[in-house]
Length: 112
Image (cartoon, rainbow, N blue to C red; front, side):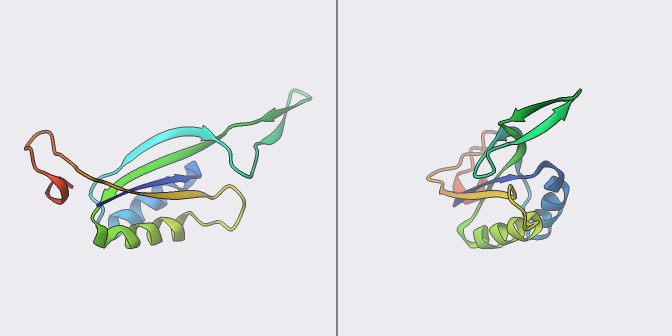
């Protein structure tokens, strides 16, 4: 089992959710986050004064999937999120040792 964590531009969320639904993802977790990578923020003009915005708004998506579905999910997120511009985001893939569905006590892939 894999935990796929994607950091994307917020306006891409609906497209990513639809793409994940098409590849069979039945549940995901979304968090609004702020951060920066190579982009290092940007400058904005407000009431005639220029100031630096260090942390940019991003959306974090977390999806737990079986090993068989991991590549399909990664491809779906990559294709839909890619604008070709800096700041498109990143995808992190981690192994999951155990998953437990609290309500039923189901374990691992049955719990997904």
